[in-house]
Length: 171
Image (cartoon, rainbow, N blue to C red):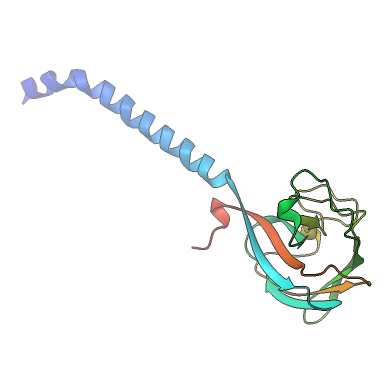
């Protein structure tokens, strides 16, 4: 038995070091995976009227913002914003019992991204309204009403964007 221990004792130190290295690398990968931010989006409504209402249970995550997507924006890569699209209005965010926020928006103060206009702040700098995260919480039900002043954009849709990390995922 002693010869067996003497024979394999020279491998014991490298094996212990290798196990610790594997544990450390696994911990680093797990920590990095937990902090990766994955962008998500979901369509809330089609803007078929001057007043568009929708209910939504906010998903787990952070960096929420609302976007007004226009059908022709995907073809306009080189433009900062379509000059012909002018709109304004307000967003009312409420629960069943109370009004939480009444946020104005318009085409001149809403940043234009490749897919549309950012109506509420989030990870995008927005001078028009504060970040949506100030008013809402994940996993809560909200009623959102979009009230457009005339004229409203034709064939526009409203999208909710947010970031979700690994730790926010549904289990």
